[in-house]
Length: 410
Image 1 (cartoon, rainbow, N blue to C red):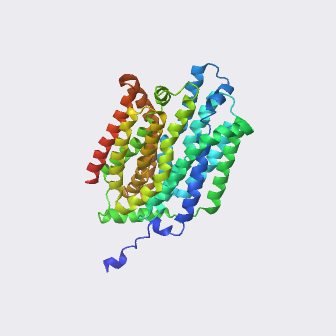
Image 2: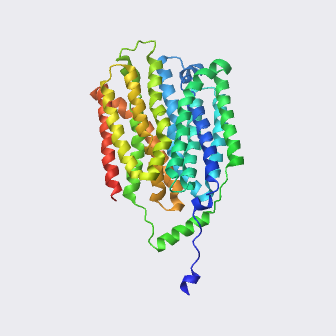
Image 3: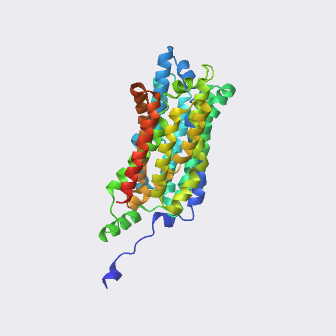
């Protein structure tokens, strides 16, 4: 009789949302694209806006521009685990709506900033309360069926990468048409459309009590224990992905200048080279995500880390800027398989009631790499020379592949 008295195990979150995840994925891709376009489109004119806000010396303009740009990533890194935990408690859709509405309001306020301090504070606030792409990763990463999660996260990653690619291009054109402040209002309008679509079209069947019941049932049957070694390896690897991509940022202009590019064209060529890794990732993110579904996420992670590490080395020996650009495209193509595969594994590394928080920590690790990467790259460039940045970063990636291989055996 004892088995009759035991409560039935409720269906999992992914099972309950099986009919919604595809439509939610389409909305999440559009929302991630528009929010990241809006956040990155200020790159071409950020120094101009900083000067417009009263900063006069060239050194101060550069310094404040860097602080303003990185403030958003710092804010997102700090609050991503909190929003992930709240997603586990209150649902994934409310976090998407919060991010979109909050970012639309903050983007409008940036357009009416009166001092550079207000600009930095608002950029930080955009990171603290925003993070639509991060919230999308939590929702799609937990809603998509396990056998399709790699592909779905790859598609989502493609939308985010495309937003980062298109943002600076749009930001280079719009100020000439509608002014710098008008460009921020246009960005806020795009995010507002994403917020409206999220409110109307995204569907979610969320019952917080069900996840707790499933977790307690798993614990009582010793069915699932969080493997802290695996979790730590995934977080380190996620950080390394962005660290490797961003480590060249502080030296790129100087490095390209040493390749014979004249002063008038250095900045433009540097922008093209920086965009090349994102272009490569757009081309392969969905395919490598689907490959992870077929052959296993660990295999894709180890393989992509090794290939990316190898692709870093020849960048130290180029003689023309287009050779560097081509190698950055190749590096982006191999990097693209990492984040979807890591997110897919992170989903299964903890029980369902903590999956949102785990994916939030993963987002923090990524943005941490985005902040740390330029700092490390700059220091290595100063102490050991520009070429050493590629050698050290490549070696770190290959070492990280060894860590991932070891974690897989656990």
